[in-house]
Length: 151
View 1 (spheres, helix red, strand yellow):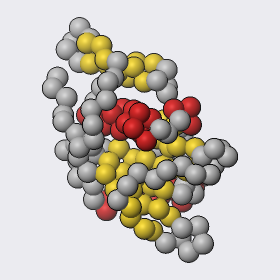
View 2 (view 1 turned 180 degrees about the vertical axis):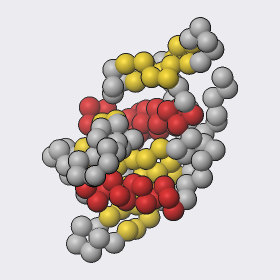
View 3 (view 1 turned 30 degrees about the vertical axis):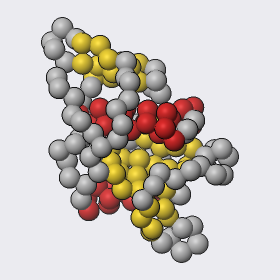
View 4 (view 1 turned 90 degrees about the horizontal axis):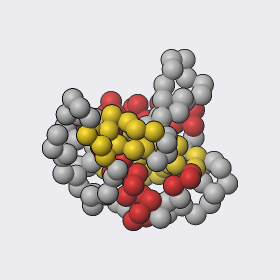
């Protein structure tokens, strides 16, 4: 498998090749081997980049947990907790070939209707969009940089 080149600096991941020619990646957050799909490649690269380059604490990152309050069983791709334990950022990842369109933004906004994160991020590894949600007016402001956790 050739791993797609992404727009974020490549991160060193712990991979293993299976007998069928597929790869698995060691997920440090779920503490198990995960089949390496294109979406998982983006997730792992992005989250390791947040920890290595942006100093996000690894222990405050959660992966694929259920979204409470939604009628159908839904799972967010990842979220980052603040120092106080509130949800700082919710993240949605797609494979590099998947365009980041309105459907992707509606998906993360739907999750956030129950989670109330301060920031929303969507990435396919080639493009990343980060939005800040203001609590007072519920206004969405798109950012050009990764936010620094301050709470």
